[in-house]
Amino acid sequence: MYYTDLQYFPNINYINTLYRGSSAHFLSNTLFKKSTFRNRIQLPSSNGVVVLSIPIKGGRGVHLPYGEVEIDYKTNWQENHFRTISTIYGSSPYFQFYELELSTLYHTRIEKLFSWNFKCLELFLKFSKMSNMVQIKTVSDVPYESLLPDNLSHDLESQPFEFPEYEQVFQEKIGFLPNMSCLDLLMNLGPDAAGYIQDLTNKLH
Image (cartoon, rainbow, N blue to C red; front, side, top):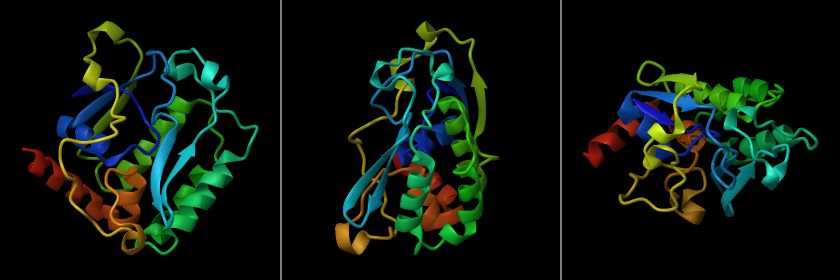
């Protein structure tokens, strides 16, 4: 079981970490860290990696517990993110199966970033059939000092292992890009995303 942060449709390494722990408690009382995957995702587009960021109130000057950080709706970021996701994955094998619920998500106004990210992770676990493999819960009463540093962030720029390849939409043009957002795994593998994560865990052991 992990006490860890909560990220926006997190990357594959993060999902693998949750799977290996079988359960995770997400902390809302730790200080929000800027320039992390808590409010951004990476997706492989036809021109390389695209980064989508959720605007937050206070911007770079925000200095609040994660659970109190509010999403800024001055711009229509939800429409922009969903349009980009639709453009990238419109021809992927599984987009049509998840399009309706994703559209509903991106038309739902959720005030707190923490709550939005929890909803995103719930949807991924549901779509990938991993809800029975990973138990998730939000908590706010775990002392920050009790956490190991490695449990606080999975924003890794490089990994000490190679990710097995799976077919990506633009792989023939730009090559395989590892450790993208779990959305990429979902759109290309659907419910087989769970098997990929299990195989990745076996590879690491």
